[in-house]
Structures are given as structure tokens and as C-alpha cells.
Image (tube, rainbow over all chains, first blue to last red; front, top):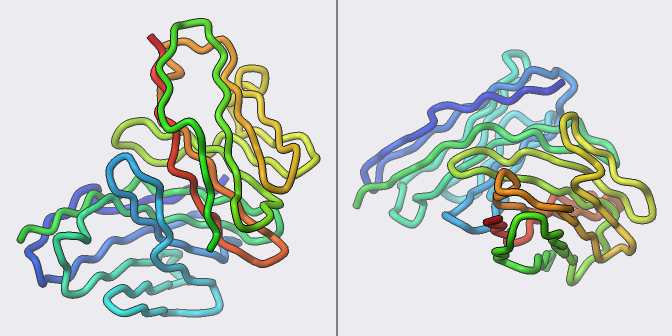
Length: 113
Length: 116
């Protein structure tokens, strides 16, 4: 089955610096890649997603890049702020009416003021 | 829009008790609902996928007789943990999606289940 690996498991950056989180997936049929942000004890919130027909997508300070050949995708956060501190999860799915998300192991991002 | 309500937010009960968790889509029709389990500092592990009016599809290793799922309407799915034991203590999160609208999954706030 699909396997999603995520690195690093923890990431500490200074406020204003950029943060990059990387994920690799195993199933070449995967075609949808969302990123979720989860604060402690709260629900995961979708922050950005990308489909396999696009190589890059940007939304203000957040961007996601996808390399289908290498089967990896990355989350880029620029000008980090303390409120960006949370656990970030990548996920992958194959698409279709009943597609399920396979989540990565998560990255704890700490933005130091 | 796309609000998912999960209830209760926290449950503490004795071993052997059965616990029901509700997941409701408040402003959209959820053709598919998912149930996840999350241990501290770990990822979300999919337990089962449910479609309205159909039997749930369970992931490998998840006991269907232990975790009963009912998706009776387009706005409500329930997860019942039967005869819960301390090892069932975890954070359970549902998500919902309207496949007809091509929506991403929207998550509930989760239920913290503690079995004494």
C-alpha cells in the first residue's frame, strides 16, 4: 500500500526565516497531496494542497512543490512567525470518489521569536 | 463553510464501557466520512471509511466488531468503541467530504477518550 515518509520530524527556525518540510510517497498513482497544520489538541486544518497536474502552488507565505518523477513534494513557509508553530502533516491519495488520505509522520515546527 | 462538529470532545470512563462518538457535517452533505485515531506525538492513522447508507470499509488491523461505525445519513456518522479498555485510550478524529463537490476532507475537533 501507499507509504508516505516525512522529514524532518522536528524543525526549529528563527522568526522571519524560511522552513521547508519534505515528503516522499511510494505509489506513483497518487495524484493529490494536501498539507495540514495541527495545533496541540486541535483539529488538522488544510493549509494548501496540490494535484499531480501542477508542479507548484503558492498561497501568500506558503508554497508547495511537487516532483512526480522523484515522488516527493515539499512545503515551504517563508517569513515564519511564532503563530506558524504547530505540527504539519503531509498526505497523499490516489483520487477517485472514495480516495483515502495516507498521512506522513508529522513535523513539529517551532518558530523562535 | 465546511464545518464538521464532533461530540463529545472528551470522555473519561471505566473499562468495559461502550462509548459513542458523533461526527456531523453542519453545512454540507458528507457522502464520505473517515475515522482516524491519533496517539500522542504520532500521525493520524485511518481506521475506516464510511459512505452514507453502506457498510464501512475498515483498514487492516482494525476490528470491525470493536469499532462500530454507522453512517446513517449524509450529515451524521457515529463511531462506537465497544467494551473499551485502557489500550483504546486515544484521540479519535473524524473527517467528512462531499465527493460530488470535489471537496477536500474537513476534520472535526476530535474526541479525547480516556479509559480508566
